Length: 266
Figure 1 (cartoon, helix red, strand yellow):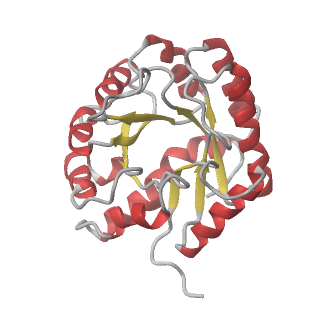
Figure 2 (cartoon, one colour):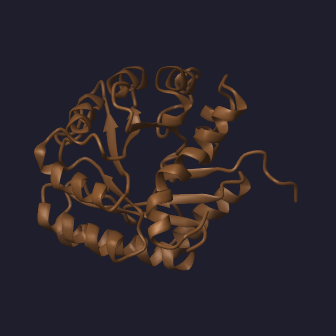
Figure 3 (cartoon, helix red, strand yellow):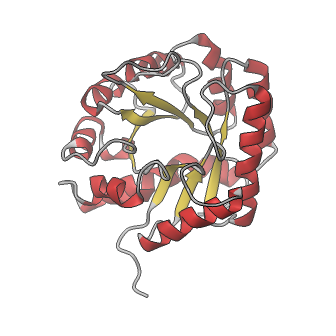
């Protein structure tokens, strides 16, 4: 088999929306799809179903589902710990359990609490101590956001308070032109391409305004297809060197400190 032109790491995938009765069956199906497109590594988070404002017990169950899936595919997938910042101590305990004492290599925040709120500060500070990135969902909906759903402007406030953190702006706010502008002043914040339709110009603008070193490929599978989201990068009018950074190089650089801590060589 010919070597793929690009190494590809996907920094945003889920067990939901994928066939299978167990976590490992669903991750196996995701990897089956990923193999068709030459995707080498997946970052996966949240469990087999989503809860908007989960209790600590639900969060732990969802993380246990991801941990179970990872045990079956340790060479192909990394996990990010899912936490709810409305439960500070439980979130810190879960971060320590899954990252410090477990195999996970990042933090996932969703829609329980807008990310400009100070309740996120202890979580981001602990993630920074552990040398792991924080991936925060952001979206701007014309129909109105969920009560705790973050916008890129919220992320800008969080980033200003945590200049030493590594923060991933998931979806770049959906309305990516505004999202790119909101995070542009913060070099430690990365634009993540997944979730929205593969509209021409998204990746080109991100590279132009942020630099290729601050842009990450992701799919949001199984909510979106790998192929439609890869099209944002492979079809973009940017240099080949920039595509290499976006598809894998940047993710590898971001994750290298925690992978080194865990004895994983790239």
